[in-house]
Length: 223
Image (cartoon, rainbow, N blue to C red; front, side, top):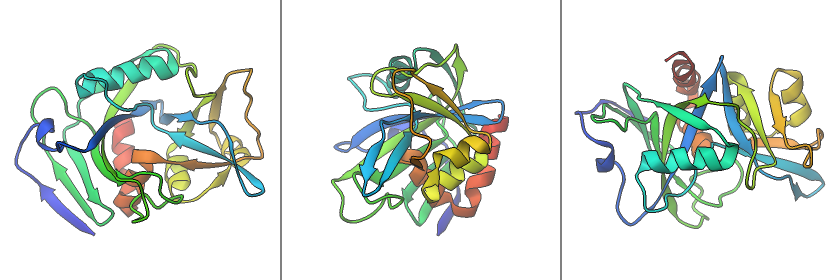
């Protein structure tokens, strides 16, 4: 794995390429826990699988900051305070991770390049439908979150859960028994027998960081 030292100061726009899908995600922290969106369960053979995703999404003719704050309101009905990070982790590929210091107001926790619609826990698999650049901000809730739009639930994960679900599927019942907490819409209660996996940019971030994932998220919870 290539781990470059901290690069020269720059601005976020220099990291975001033209002509590529650009989206946002949030590392939402509170009391040593992290909040994720829960997608509707899907059948995979005999199992039901629940995918977790960071709150965020595609841009709509707006800045990255405006986009991620809009998505937060649409997906969980409350505001978010963004926390500027001293350093930004840049995941170029599974084996190429850099750290940069950014200037200006937009200083996210990470910028992650990954592929789309890949097999589970393989966000750089060559059999995919293109590549995207995901900008991952650190944030704190400004209100009470509640699942909205296409999300039937939200889930609070403890740090070991974040690492574990990025690397493998985990039974929902096991997560709940070990301290994870669901925020559910009563009309769409989730099956406790389902399996859970983290997806998208934060899955890729954990996998690329490897052994550094734990201290990275510990630092995010302590800022």
